[in-house]
Every structure is written in structure tokens, then in C-alpha cells.
Image (cartoon, rainbow, N blue to C red; front, side, top):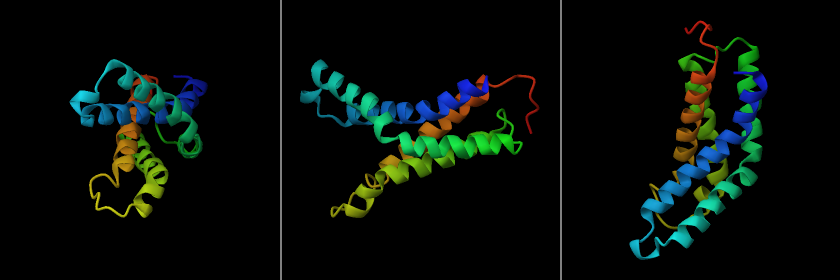
Amino acid sequence: MKDSTRVGLELLGLPLLAGLLFFGFIAVLMPEGQRGGDSLLGIFLLCVVFAPLVGIFPSVFYMVIMEFAFKRGLNPRSIKMVALSGALGFGAGTLLGWPIIISSEEDLTGGRFLYSFIGLFAGLILGCIIRWGSSKSANVP
């Protein structure tokens, strides 16, 4: 995988994957009477268009940290890279969900950290995509 392709994935992949995961979560929890095609399409477009706009700053931070790690010798095919990607995704999700976490008056113990876990899974998926797309000739520690 070329460096420019990897940087593009790091910038756009994290918010797009998180938006898709968030859409899936909403679609599953949506009451059956509201699952019409128009409402699902509207929610899908909102998640896919809105996620990159909101998530651009955490994505830039993710990309800078990942590229710094690669320049310092982190192998793109290593499991350490996937773990770092997941950790950075968790941090990005927590950052985006922070206003909800601190302002929620209701006891939403599972819902408060929804963004964090969506970020974690998006980071892990993106890490796996980068790992599998990287050169096969790289040594994997």
C-alpha cells in the first residue's frame, strides 16, 4: 500500500467506518414501525455524510500519530499497529462522545460510552485493513 493511500484511509476511513457502525447500531435499535426505507436511507446518509465532517479533527490526530509511529519503525503489518489503531479509535470516539458523557443526566451506563466503543471497533477494522493492504514482504514481529 502506498503512503498516500494509507494516509487517505487514515483520514477518511475512521469516520466513515464509525458512521457505518453507528448506522448499524441505530438501525438495529430502531422500532420496527419506523424502519421504513425512507427513514433508514435518511439516517444512513446522515451518518455517512455527517461523520466525516464531525470526525475530521480526531481523524487528523489519528493520522499524525499513526504516521509518526510508522516513521519511527512501526511495521504496518504488525499486530501492534492494529492495537495502536484500535486505541486511537477509542480515543477519537471518546473525544467525540465527551459532551454526551459529561452532560447526560440520565443513567445511560451502556449508552454513555457508545461512541468510545464504536471508535474502538472502527479503529480495529481500519488497522486490519491497513495491515492486510500493506506489503507482504514486510517482516511481521
